[in-house]
Image 1: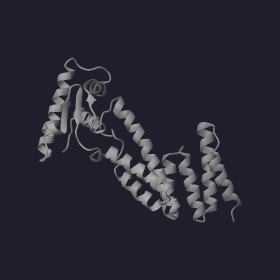
Image 2: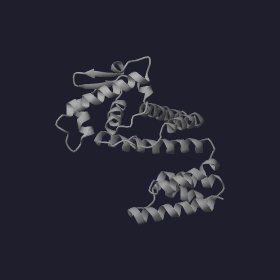
Image 3: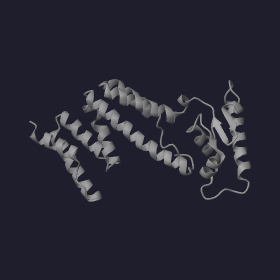
Image 4: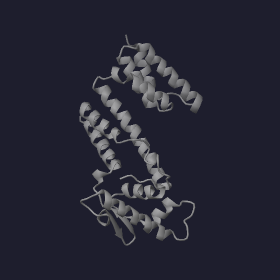
Length: 233
Protein backbone atom coordinates (compact mmCIF):
# COMPACT_ATOMS: atom_id res chain seq x y z
CA UNK A 1 0.00 0.00 0.00
CA UNK A 2 1.60 3.24 -1.18
CA UNK A 3 0.22 6.61 -0.07
CA UNK A 4 1.48 9.74 -1.79
CA UNK A 5 -0.88 12.44 -0.44
CA UNK A 6 0.96 14.40 2.25
CA UNK A 7 -1.91 14.90 4.71
CA UNK A 8 -3.07 11.32 4.34
CA UNK A 9 0.43 10.11 5.20
CA UNK A 10 0.36 12.32 8.29
CA UNK A 11 -2.96 10.89 9.42
CA UNK A 12 -1.74 7.31 8.98
CA UNK A 13 1.55 8.03 10.77
CA UNK A 14 -0.26 9.63 13.72
CA UNK A 15 -2.67 6.68 13.98
CA UNK A 16 0.16 4.12 13.62
CA UNK A 17 2.33 5.53 16.41
CA UNK A 18 -0.77 5.41 18.63
CA UNK A 19 -1.97 1.99 17.44
CA UNK A 20 -4.65 0.59 19.75
CA UNK A 21 -5.35 3.97 21.33
CA UNK A 22 -7.85 6.65 20.38
CA UNK A 23 -6.46 9.64 18.52
CA UNK A 24 -8.81 12.53 19.13
CA UNK A 25 -10.08 14.62 16.25
CA UNK A 26 -8.74 17.80 17.85
CA UNK A 27 -5.30 16.22 18.15
CA UNK A 28 -5.39 15.33 14.47
CA UNK A 29 -6.33 18.88 13.60
CA UNK A 30 -3.46 20.30 15.68
CA UNK A 31 -1.03 17.94 13.93
CA UNK A 32 -2.26 18.55 10.40
CA UNK A 33 -2.78 22.31 10.63
CA UNK A 34 -0.51 23.71 13.40
CA UNK A 35 -0.89 27.24 11.97
CA UNK A 36 -4.68 27.11 12.03
CA UNK A 37 -7.24 24.79 10.38
CA UNK A 38 -9.52 25.53 7.43
CA UNK A 39 -13.22 26.21 8.05
CA UNK A 40 -14.38 22.75 6.96
CA UNK A 41 -11.70 20.96 8.97
CA UNK A 42 -13.81 18.20 10.54
CA UNK A 43 -15.27 17.25 7.18
CA UNK A 44 -11.74 17.10 5.74
CA UNK A 45 -10.60 14.80 8.56
CA UNK A 46 -13.58 12.51 7.92
CA UNK A 47 -12.63 12.45 4.24
CA UNK A 48 -9.06 11.40 5.07
CA UNK A 49 -10.34 8.60 7.31
CA UNK A 50 -12.70 7.43 4.55
CA UNK A 51 -9.85 7.43 2.04
CA UNK A 52 -7.65 5.37 4.38
CA UNK A 53 -10.42 2.83 4.87
CA UNK A 54 -10.80 2.46 1.11
CA UNK A 55 -7.05 1.90 0.81
CA UNK A 56 -7.20 -0.73 3.56
CA UNK A 57 -10.10 -2.44 1.76
CA UNK A 58 -7.99 -2.76 -1.39
CA UNK A 59 -4.80 -3.80 0.41
CA UNK A 60 -5.95 -6.33 3.03
CA UNK A 61 -8.14 -9.27 2.05
CA UNK A 62 -8.80 -10.54 5.58
CA UNK A 63 -10.06 -7.30 7.14
CA UNK A 64 -12.13 -4.39 6.00
CA UNK A 65 -11.12 -0.77 6.43
CA UNK A 66 -13.84 -0.10 9.02
CA UNK A 67 -12.43 -2.94 11.15
CA UNK A 68 -8.85 -1.66 10.95
CA UNK A 69 -9.70 2.03 11.38
CA UNK A 70 -12.40 2.25 14.02
CA UNK A 71 -14.50 5.31 14.84
CA UNK A 72 -14.80 6.29 18.49
CA UNK A 73 -17.00 9.06 19.97
CA UNK A 74 -14.02 11.39 20.26
CA UNK A 75 -11.71 10.16 17.51
CA UNK A 76 -10.31 7.15 15.69
CA UNK A 77 -8.33 4.00 16.54
CA UNK A 78 -5.98 2.03 14.28
CA UNK A 79 -6.89 -1.48 15.45
CA UNK A 80 -3.68 -3.36 14.72
CA UNK A 81 -1.32 -5.11 17.17
CA UNK A 82 1.60 -2.97 18.27
CA UNK A 83 3.94 -5.69 16.96
CA UNK A 84 2.84 -4.67 13.46
CA UNK A 85 4.18 -1.14 13.95
CA UNK A 86 7.95 -0.65 13.54
CA UNK A 87 8.12 1.99 16.29
CA UNK A 88 6.83 -0.43 18.91
CA UNK A 89 8.85 -3.36 17.59
CA UNK A 90 12.00 -1.22 17.78
CA UNK A 91 11.31 -0.20 21.39
CA UNK A 92 10.58 -3.80 22.39
CA UNK A 93 13.82 -5.06 20.85
CA UNK A 94 15.76 -2.25 22.54
CA UNK A 95 14.32 -3.18 25.94
CA UNK A 96 15.10 -6.87 25.40
CA UNK A 97 18.68 -6.04 24.39
CA UNK A 98 19.21 -4.05 27.59
CA UNK A 99 18.09 -7.09 29.59
CA UNK A 100 20.53 -9.33 27.69
CA UNK A 101 23.40 -6.94 28.41
CA UNK A 102 22.50 -6.96 32.11
CA UNK A 103 22.56 -10.78 31.95
CA UNK A 104 26.07 -10.65 30.42
CA UNK A 105 24.85 -12.02 27.08
CA UNK A 106 26.50 -9.62 24.59
CA UNK A 107 26.11 -11.84 21.52
CA UNK A 108 22.34 -12.12 21.95
CA UNK A 109 22.10 -8.40 22.80
CA UNK A 110 23.95 -7.49 19.61
CA UNK A 111 21.63 -9.69 17.54
CA UNK A 112 18.55 -7.98 18.99
CA UNK A 113 20.04 -4.54 18.43
CA UNK A 114 20.91 -5.29 14.81
CA UNK A 115 17.35 -6.44 14.28
CA UNK A 116 16.07 -3.22 15.89
CA UNK A 117 18.35 -1.02 13.81
CA UNK A 118 17.21 -2.70 10.58
CA UNK A 119 13.80 -1.18 11.33
CA UNK A 120 15.29 2.32 11.30
CA UNK A 121 14.97 3.50 7.73
CA UNK A 122 15.50 7.16 8.57
CA UNK A 123 13.63 9.62 10.81
CA UNK A 124 9.97 8.80 11.37
CA UNK A 125 8.87 11.91 9.51
CA UNK A 126 11.58 11.98 6.86
CA UNK A 127 9.05 11.96 4.03
CA UNK A 128 6.12 13.40 5.97
CA UNK A 129 5.31 17.02 6.68
CA UNK A 130 5.11 16.75 10.47
CA UNK A 131 3.28 18.75 13.07
CA UNK A 132 4.28 19.00 16.74
CA UNK A 133 3.48 15.40 17.73
CA UNK A 134 5.27 13.62 14.89
CA UNK A 135 8.23 16.01 15.05
CA UNK A 136 8.64 15.44 18.79
CA UNK A 137 8.43 11.70 18.27
CA UNK A 138 11.01 11.80 15.50
CA UNK A 139 13.45 13.59 17.83
CA UNK A 140 12.86 10.99 20.56
CA UNK A 141 13.30 8.07 18.18
CA UNK A 142 16.55 9.49 16.81
CA UNK A 143 17.90 9.61 20.36
CA UNK A 144 16.77 6.00 20.89
CA UNK A 145 18.39 5.00 17.59
CA UNK A 146 21.71 6.46 18.72
CA UNK A 147 21.31 4.66 22.03
CA UNK A 148 20.73 1.40 20.16
CA UNK A 149 23.87 1.98 18.08
CA UNK A 150 25.87 2.74 21.22
CA UNK A 151 24.55 -0.37 23.01
CA UNK A 152 25.28 -2.56 19.98
CA UNK A 153 28.86 -1.32 19.94
CA UNK A 154 29.09 -1.93 23.69
CA UNK A 155 27.87 -5.49 23.08
CA UNK A 156 30.41 -5.99 20.27
CA UNK A 157 33.22 -4.75 22.53
CA UNK A 158 32.11 -7.17 25.25
CA UNK A 159 32.14 -9.90 22.59
CA UNK A 160 35.76 -9.07 21.62
CA UNK A 161 34.84 -7.68 18.21
CA UNK A 162 36.89 -4.50 18.73
CA UNK A 163 38.84 -4.77 15.46
CA UNK A 164 35.66 -5.14 13.42
CA UNK A 165 34.03 -1.95 14.69
CA UNK A 166 36.89 0.56 14.40
CA UNK A 167 35.81 1.75 10.95
CA UNK A 168 32.19 2.16 12.00
CA UNK A 169 33.22 4.10 15.10
CA UNK A 170 35.40 6.46 13.05
CA UNK A 171 32.37 7.18 10.87
CA UNK A 172 30.16 7.77 13.92
CA UNK A 173 32.71 10.15 15.45
CA UNK A 174 32.87 12.11 12.19
CA UNK A 175 29.07 12.29 11.98
CA UNK A 176 28.33 12.95 15.67
CA UNK A 177 31.21 15.24 16.59
CA UNK A 178 29.93 16.06 20.10
CA UNK A 179 28.81 12.55 21.05
CA UNK A 180 31.54 11.71 23.59
CA UNK A 181 30.42 8.11 24.04
CA UNK A 182 31.49 7.23 20.50
CA UNK A 183 34.96 8.72 21.06
CA UNK A 184 35.38 6.67 24.23
CA UNK A 185 34.34 3.47 22.47
CA UNK A 186 36.68 4.24 19.57
CA UNK A 187 39.55 4.79 22.01
CA UNK A 188 38.80 1.47 23.67
CA UNK A 189 38.49 -0.42 20.36
CA UNK A 190 41.79 1.02 19.08
CA UNK A 191 43.62 0.36 22.35
CA UNK A 192 42.42 -3.23 22.48
CA UNK A 193 43.50 -3.62 18.84
CA UNK A 194 47.07 -2.62 19.79
CA UNK A 195 46.77 0.87 18.24
CA UNK A 196 47.72 2.86 21.33
CA UNK A 197 48.91 5.99 19.53
CA UNK A 198 45.72 6.27 17.46
CA UNK A 199 43.63 5.86 20.61
CA UNK A 200 45.46 8.78 22.26
CA UNK A 201 44.99 10.87 19.10
CA UNK A 202 41.23 10.28 19.37
CA UNK A 203 41.33 11.60 22.94
CA UNK A 204 43.19 14.73 21.81
CA UNK A 205 40.60 15.26 19.07
CA UNK A 206 37.81 14.92 21.62
CA UNK A 207 39.47 17.37 23.99
CA UNK A 208 39.94 19.97 21.23
CA UNK A 209 36.40 19.64 19.88
CA UNK A 210 34.77 19.92 23.31
CA UNK A 211 36.91 22.94 24.16
CA UNK A 212 36.33 24.69 20.82
CA UNK A 213 32.60 23.95 20.53
CA UNK A 214 31.39 23.96 24.14
CA UNK A 215 34.20 25.23 26.34
CA UNK A 216 34.17 21.89 28.19
CA UNK A 217 36.69 19.23 29.14
CA UNK A 218 36.35 15.48 28.51
CA UNK A 219 34.41 13.54 31.13
CA UNK A 220 36.04 11.65 33.97
CA UNK A 221 35.36 8.41 32.06
CA UNK A 222 37.29 9.65 29.03
CA UNK A 223 40.16 10.99 31.17
CA UNK A 224 40.36 7.70 33.09
CA UNK A 225 40.57 5.72 29.84
CA UNK A 226 43.26 8.06 28.51
CA UNK A 227 45.29 7.50 31.68
CA UNK A 228 44.91 3.73 31.41
CA UNK A 229 46.15 3.87 27.82
CA UNK A 230 49.11 6.09 28.76
CA UNK A 231 50.31 3.79 31.55
CA UNK A 232 49.70 0.57 29.60
CA UNK A 233 52.59 -1.31 28.08
